[in-house]
Image 1 (spheres, rainbow, N blue to C red):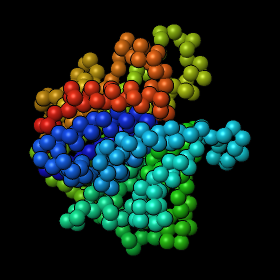
Image 2: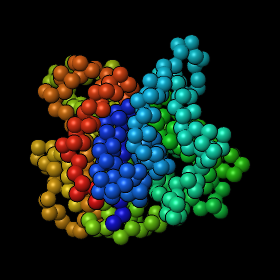
Image 3: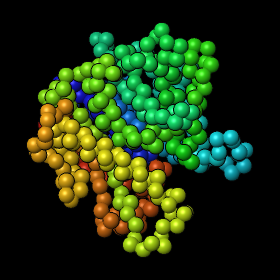
Image 4: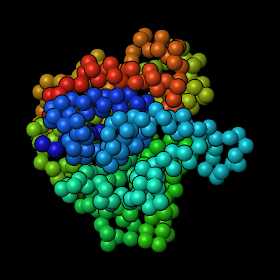
Length: 370
């Protein structure tokens, strides 16, 4: 069986996903009887958007979940370091946070020398196992220059990863690609990447969460299956297992009064509502195209689709881990931790850890993973 691990965007709320991954790692270590077992040893394909791209790339690189969680806990505040008010206005606009600390951390991690002096490219051999097996990595970014979503992989058979091409994606520095996927507008400056052997083409990239793939599960599955991507994995619930992780879901509804719909409210709430709605739709499609083995209800009409026979052959088996809050139950939580729903909720890291730990203990089962 081929296994895909997909990780949603969500800023510092990736800590919730990491607690679930920590429990998954524990269960797999118990199953295989190896205390040093890594998720990289179990999964063939890692896909991530924004904070999910950081986690996916680190897992594919060979980090344990403990190491990644330590990065978030120790460097969370530094990752969201406010930009000084006196910084000159850039042509890309003013962002709330300084991207340099995050960029420097990623450059150090994803380097050939471990010190950040020799940046590893997307085509690096460090994404191979000792036996030579390549760990596939998909990072979602938005090419702001062309206005298109770029789900970029290290798949050596992909059309734009051929070495004879001048602009071969395998030559993109991995740390820049991951940083680009986290470049949420308003929060962080875009990432500028020069492509081509002579670095003649300049592109501006922003956060993959403003593409349809803030939840990258479906595009990862399509990348593995469709002929155009040249991997062409054999389909079937017993052939491909997709495990998809969210970063909490908060209600985006409005009080039933029209005067709330003024321009300021729309500007701050509609983007988040659209991202959440599209991510939920991606989850829904995965449950329809795959055989859903576990997941919370989509809504009160569709429910979870677990065990529901659907038309046609299922392409893969599917697990979805996420915690959704209803309006009534989230009120007290957000009253105590008002920043929790935001991407930069660094002060709520202990709360995110507790939520993730409790969720994982209750919902993650060995039979979902094996």
